[in-house]
Image 1 (cartoon, rainbow, N blue to C red):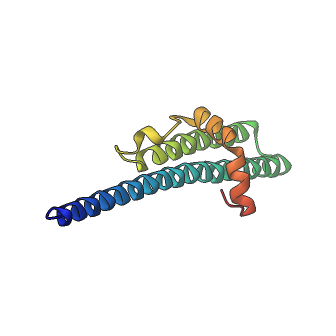
Image 2 (cartoon, rainbow, N blue to C red):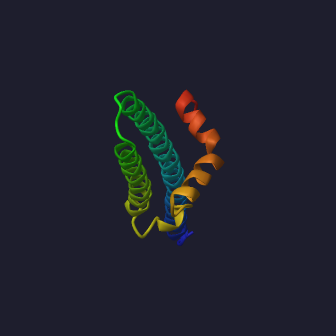
Length: 136
């Protein structure tokens, strides 16, 4: 009986440490899920913006052709659009990767545009759920 207070203290410490451990694990899982959803939604937004950029490119080229622009000018605009698109793809993926920092670097499952689009395709259901407002 004289050590019952020690047993109570040890049980309390064990319970506290166990609670903190499970809270930490739960918070870690949620953080990883938030990172994954953020990556997918960010890539989706970038892909959609590129779709609209390509529409603007087609519209501008059509207007230039209607106005009788030279083939040289049309080719120059096409090259400019291609360069801007390639730069945008490269910089946007690099920015997503850089934002994770060294601690979460292993959470990024892509390293360039083609692998990012494969990752987006693999997580299509998460994007659709996000757009619909469903719980992910």
